[in-house]
Image 1 (cartoon, rainbow, N blue to C red):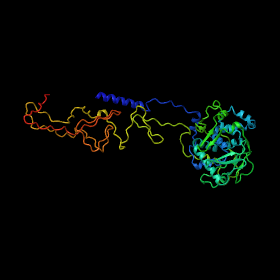
Image 2 (cartoon, rainbow, N blue to C red):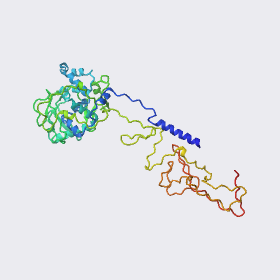
Image 3 (cartoon, helix red, strand yellow):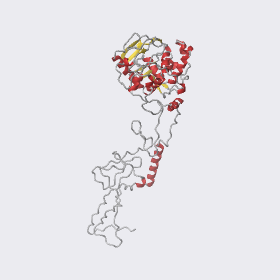
Length: 486
């Protein structure tokens, strides 16, 4: 029996050690990419409130759908936006139009969203002049895409309710299952709305986070920005750079045509794009890398006059830092538990199931579950085999040879307190070895039932506390069994 306990216990211990995350084989961890390493050294805001999202989205929420999504995606690549701004400062590049512009952009390792904005050079200038706002916008879209797209619809609803957002000869405004869609009236020409956010959305919902106002860049809009919505100069559509993406407002995703997307920038041109197209939708896979101080363009000169009443400058939207944590998009792992330590709870607060071969950890006391199995050295003696009489706890010495037998069978004295076996489990005590307690049932005089098989080795039920049954007195003329000689 001792060999059986030793073998079973050794097997359970071996399985537990091999199933432990700290001792088992682990998958190799890939080193971080240069962008992820740089983002870790330059942590950015990881979360914005709805009021802050409304604040930074206010100057662009009324842009045509396709232009808006291109701008949001490009903002997640602020370094490429800076590079595009420098590229467009070359007069030869700025003069390119149509297919010539597409051919010149093809070998560059920029994201398709950045290349598409090259057809709107004033938008690139605006994003460079207010780079802090661009980085905050890209961080918000990379980390809070669902919330960002939902807040765009929130602002559009307010603009419609205020009477400012309505169809014009330049833009068509329509409802699509409760979502507001903004599209160019002429498919070959795009006009960008110019407006004062403090008036376009009616009463601003949060006075502590007033909307951002971005003055129109040069050669973009002529005239004063009044109470209504004006429009920029027209931008001719360049087919390869337009129409490859559009917002899916109901699912808060950006739908993409994969073939047209990869035709603009191939994987070989941009191996570290940190974006993937999965199920025809755009997904950001890496953190937003802020532009180092030595490569940042000079900020736009501050106008002498303050921004319109009820608005703030773009630099305000780049300042709020709500929660500092790991770099956006970085993969974080929890340390493996030490040997003998219960596993760490997951994000939902649930403890993961044990790995293969590892016995489940016992629940905490008072949880209503069975108590942990006893140590093999502390296990009670094994129960008698089927058909054997129960082992007596303690009996008086048999009569010595030559002494007459007693007139009555001996009655065993009560066991000493130090030698008394543990009592049978009561209904209120947790059962031993996973066996359900027998509430109110008296203990059996016969051999106890064998415990159910259960890893690790099942403990045996405690021996009965009831003394062996008394023998009836001998009948007249009947002899008792002679005592055994030792």
